[in-house]
Length: 255
Image 1: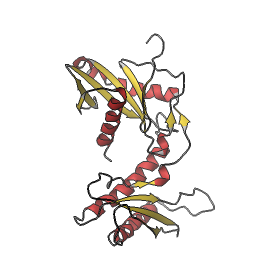
Image 2 (image 1 turned 135 degrees about the vertical axis):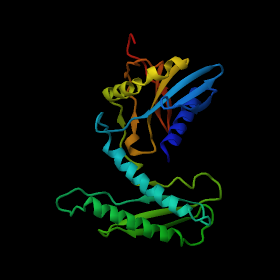
Image 3 (image 1 turned 120 degrees about the vertical axis):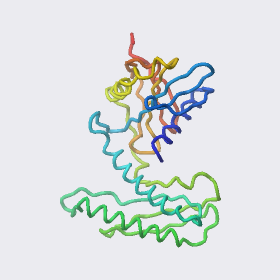
Image 4 (image 1 turned 45 degrees about the horizontal axis):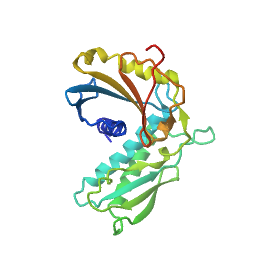
């Protein structure tokens, strides 16, 4: 899903959780969005936070998830390029990457060639699925170069459910839950605050939404009790676990 579309989902969830009756429109980067609330205009910035994220190097889990998501979305795009394609949802289970000296490590070029080959063979199988009634299930496997199978779970959908584009790699949808690191959260606020001077004089208030996306293992995070941040010019900071809801982060005393 495109970044802006996903950010809009987070924003809509925040407005619903907070009971805001407002109309959101795209911002001019920055901010990510403007919200019209009667005569007032509120600026909203959106940023994501990840488990095991390094302030400078980012999150290796999130990087892997993006690769997996690209793999699934490219197959979906190729599949639906056929106007006769039936509405389906696909969940993909990929074998884990084994980083061990006892196992031959494929080069980046070999991995790319292998994943492209798997994608092409998968697309061929999808275009020749058996006839499936809505909500019926089907499964098939496509073997990788090393012989291990990628498994594709198919769910037939009625037309126009809106779920036919939600193809996911399920490897990245499970995991343990951690707590938001206070220093990382403050770094997120600091990075977004650098742009406040570009738009704050044009709005009644500016808020920051920090999102841990529970749809991905890298987003399995909770806000620990007692955590607080320096708002650095924002009027409010909100933390959202996408599936569970939105809560305001209290400011450091005196800020």
